[in-house]
Image (cartoon, rainbow, N blue to C red):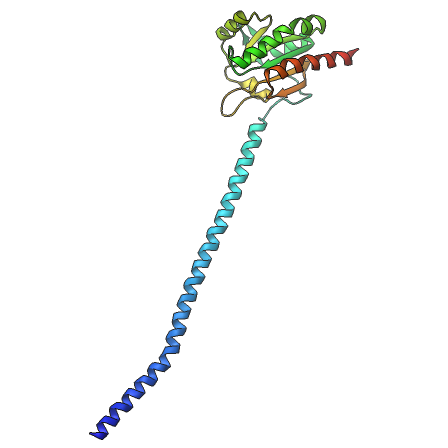
Amino acid sequence: MQLRSSTVQATKRSASAESEKEKPAKRAKTDKKVAAKKTGKQAKAKAKAETKVVKTKKEHTSKAESKKEAKQTPGELEIGDAIPEDVVLEDQNSKQVNLLQLAKKAHILVVFVYPRASTPGCTRQAKGFRDEYDELTKKLKATVVGLSADSPKAQQKFIERQSLQYDLLCDPGRSLIATLGCKKHPKGTIRSHFIFVDGILRVKKVKVSPEVSYKGALEQVKEIVAEKK
């Protein structure tokens, strides 16, 4: 019995010793798994962060490019540019008007652009040019026309209601409005005014108030006339 008991105890001690030997190996294996899992998570987090940075850069670039496109349309007229020869629009009487020919004939041509006929701000702008019409045309020898995306019928009503002495041009597709740089994206018109001398763009004022439009145009025409003396 003693021999058998001794043998059992020896076997237990041997198994315990082997178990103790295996523990460091198991811990090392577990540590490796934890480290690998941690490294994997870190790698995924890094990749996700890098992807986010790239995406943010792309979005920023895209927004910047969109703003640039909105700010300046391809083919947009700048100071010193001539009116394209093929710009032909209808006036309030549905009569075809070649803008370049009109500008050359007028010598000094003032074109004020408004969003929509018979609306409050546009009415103030149109009435301002109406009130300054005699000084602009008789004293300073300039020609004044209005421009919007309205139809000939709407322009004619605007003229009759406000007793306007000048023609109003129609650009329903906003092609000239875009060329002038006052088309609002994706659609719409920005209040502006432009002054051409012999068909060449001399003054370009985009995004102005009704009062700044007609008062500013008057002063700018005066300056142009003074230079000629």
